[in-house]
Length: 221
Image (cartoon, rainbow, N blue to C red; front, top):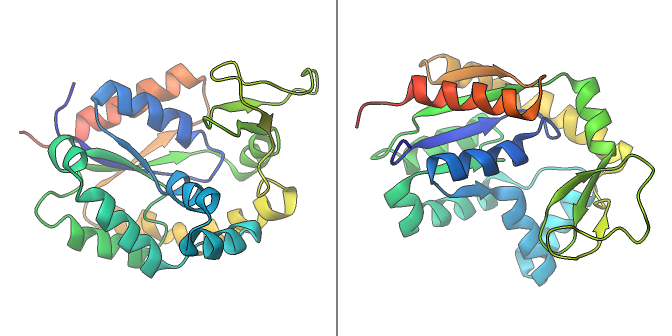
């Protein structure tokens, strides 16, 4: 275990980031902070932010920097993130967000930024087959042989396709990633904080590669 680890996991949506973040969170005993989960919770609760975010997410867009930075700043100030570190999943998405994050983390800098590299074509295949439990968020892969209604093995909730997992919305999100998020690679490469991990392998092998990247980049306590 590496106490106080602070890391960011980048990569195209559908690269397996969410599942690997959960595993890394348990392995390093740090909170998994998913901005996507935070936004979807706001949507379910029907907050003002949730209503605004749903409109953007349904169109495959990205929520604005000002809202996202404020959301992350508040979360990183909570005791678990301050004391134990964290894994950021889904943030930053732009260089502007990354610069804001550096200001937020000026006293406790990020240890490593990992780019989980998976080709776009494979990502499209993965996301269109993705199904999610409406209640607990467990991810599944559709094969076409599932019994309907599809019941979650973890909590018994309904398993379904997310509204924003249509082919059109996915393609739009990937286009936005290439335009806005890819420059983060250069941003973090400049000061040596970036580690690129090949995400095309079995889940266990990808996890091994990720943990090795964190351990190799961890600053001395």
